[in-house]
Amino acid sequence: MKSKLVFATGNLGKLNEVKELFADKNVQILSIHDFDGIPEIIENGETFSENAFIKADTIFEITGLPTIADDSGLVVFQLNGEPGIYSARYAGENCTYEDNNRKIIAALSNFDKPHLAKFVSCAVYVDKLHRIECIGELEGELISEFRGSNGFGYDPIFVPSGSNKTLAEVSLLEKNKESHRAKAFNKLKLELTKKEIL
Ligand code: IMP
Image (tube, rainbow, N blue to C red):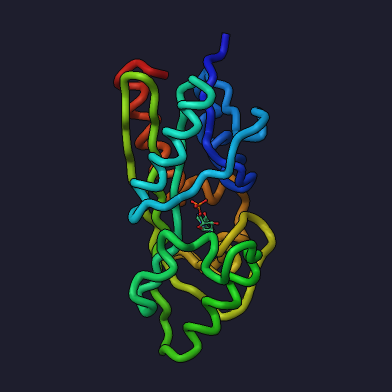
């Protein structure tokens, strides 16, 4: 029988990526959509790591099932690291991905190219006995127009180093070969395998 792992996210973009990354493991990935009455989680940590553990601890407490979470975001060097941990709500509460992308493009219009940036993902695992954390990063450049319709978030304006396509112009499988989230969760999978948890 497959074991169950809850991914503490409601973000379908992240969920699809992580389900694919764990496809070779005998594990069923659930998300908060599989449970009723999950409260809104207040991500009031000061780092990706703190926020990832806030999500995982909350969902582990509610479900009692081993839980993974990821806190991730875009770090833009010319913007002193913004939006960082505030990536989801950069253009304000309830903003769309498009609002966020437009705000970044506007903020960068005062700076010379290239607009260097990186995505960061902190992936964590929590159960009664373990607390594990792994980081993954993806470096690249931001462009000033939207290209592609795959993925989510800042994907349409982010071109990884060494590529000429945005992350929204590649397939999920392609993105999962090199993305910050793929790196973080592949490291986490390795740790879970080494510790015989998965
Ligand atoms: P979180 O759900 O609090 O981790 O917020 C992550 C936010 O960072 C997302 O809403 C996106 O705006 C951005 N982000 C994180 N990972 C990605 C990615 O793989 N592609 C595009 N945007 C991302």
